[in-house]
Length: 268
Image (cartoon, rainbow, N blue to C red; front, top):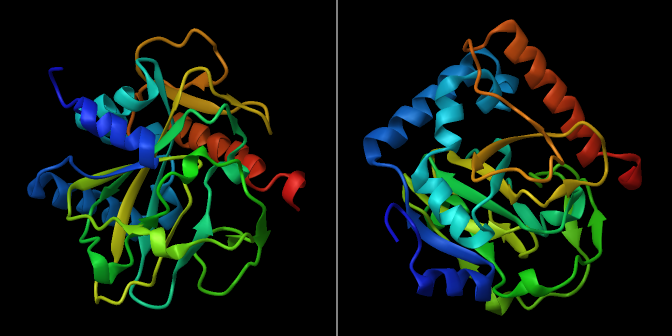
């Protein structure tokens, strides 16, 4: 296929393993520019980095970039929504991520959900890149314990309680501008960042249009490919003014809905 689509072999590898890494995405110059944009926003207000596709035209265009969306449609089908854009930033130090499944708390069903994780800095072996347990996306959702452990970067320190065979883990280092894809159920984790630079991941969560939010009302998404024949989410339009008041109000509404989904009474 034309564009930036995956080969049949790579689609089969994703279907077998539940992840795919590395994939080319942005040039070194583009990657530096994205990091500079992010860090400029952080310098003004760290919370402003969340939901940037709602408040800035450049992030809206970014989540539609065919270098990301074409591979996503290869594994999810032609009709795709962006559910969220977040940033997973591991500063140098002791922070880590325990083994978990993303699907546990998001409320998205069915699990036709894939994350594109784009490296905006070096995500080599010493930075604590993601490691995956291949094939575990075919497993059910496992029991997880909320540990709230110090240095665990997950919001609840959630950790799978079942004993896992870590000898099967596959490390997925990325160079700046490369990306990985992973299924919402695949088990993954990461170790501390032992370098002197922050490890910056831009995390784009996409879902097929048949997916619905089961935990809260009023969730929002962006149609990035095909058509939405289900209407399970309120669709977000391209921002008319970067950081405009109406855009920032929608960003705040979006954040409140997501917090209710991620920290609902089901898990309190």
